[in-house]
Amino acid sequence: VVPLGYVLASLPFILPVAGRLGHEIIGDRDSYQALWNPWWIARAAATGHTVLFTDMVWAPVGSPTIFHTLAPAQSVGMLALRPLLGEVLAYNAVILLAFPLAGSAAYLLVRSLGADRPSSFVAGLAFAWCPFLTTKLKWIGSAHRGILVLFALALVQALPLDGARPTRQAQARLALAALAVQFTDSTLAVFAANLGLVRLGAGMIRRRALLAPIRQFQVA
Image (cartoon, rainbow, N blue to C red):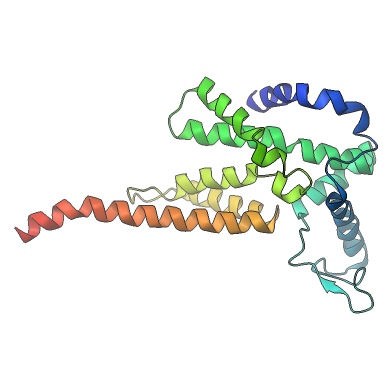
């Protein structure tokens, strides 16, 4: 229900350009590399070639793609949608899915922190359509920041600040979220690593603060 709410809330922004989504890509010339990504992944899979190196650019030497924004998750999604929608519309559909994903992820995170449903929905809407995200649509990896929010949610559940032992389910969710970040965008992986360090540091500081009165009592 919540993702559908964000889809409906997005319609006023999407409908004015709906007639152009089948033949114009969202973004600018930087976006064309995202159309190359699924082509290369499909070609590499068909020929048994690694996706981490290509001889299709910088010929005849070739170039590694490990630092290229390959966006495997989005590229596979585009490959799945292409037979139904065509190349351009499949790309635009994957881009537009970033909005309900970001909104739903923010909703879940805010709900987990104790907010009520209406407040969480508004928070998700504000995050999904904030300028920081809408100006990143030309980069398909950066557009899917909702994955980073899901990682933050898993991080909060797997690393409690009070030092309590997390459940195996929480640990598994964190591992899956980290994997999803890695397969979404390399820059998101950097942000996720920073979030992890901040969470670990906050937990260490809080545990020391909780232990301070005990230590003072022992000294006395």
